[in-house]
Length: 81
Image (tube, rainbow, N blue to C red; front, side, top):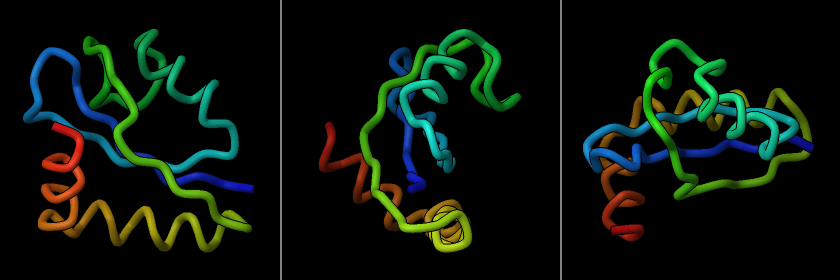
């Protein structure tokens, strides 16, 4: 089981990050400890979106789509805020 997730920076609602993982709890912890992706270092993050997929291939395809679809990302942010 894999997840696609979207994070929002706790210090600024302008910064968001999209990723995928098979262990979402561990991955968010790594992001907040500064050990996640380079872009996420130095900020605290909160999960505003997550969706479950059966396999890694499906999750990676959806992660790519969400990363490139800024309109959808904005809609997700607006629902959260």
